[in-house]
Image (cartoon, rainbow, N blue to C red; front, side, top):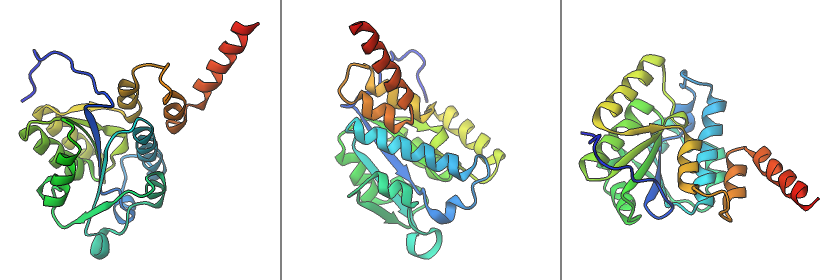
Length: 208
């Protein structure tokens, strides 16, 4: 259970990893709690920003060849060279290869996004807590099949102690400093190119 007295320990590039679960074409067709286009935009932005911040990223599918199809192409394109682990287990953490891949990151703070939220994100997130990890959910990079499922999944995670946030806020927490050399790439990944423009205008103003 979440300890409210525990001091705040921010996410960093050194302590966090990203776990993306089952953003597959077949599952995407059933998403009803947000538009599939919005969901794809958010998970791709999350993946690109995580890469810019050099986070380890674990990607997995379930029943890729028999039921739910491949990972959505936009996400594959955002993660060139990524090894996508296909499994049969419902809970990604019950798959030995996925569990080993997560352990191999060496990180104790895990950011999850999954499709569906109440199963593919919730089950491994609450399992992570039981294994001593801190678990976070990028809620807007998760989708599901109706609002009741979304609300129930969020309630279960919150009751267990999973930390809920949106994808951009989690990446901003990790970036921490706008002076970091990765800042431009992170803002670009999050479709915040206007932030770079504002900075350029400010620099031009300072020179004048």
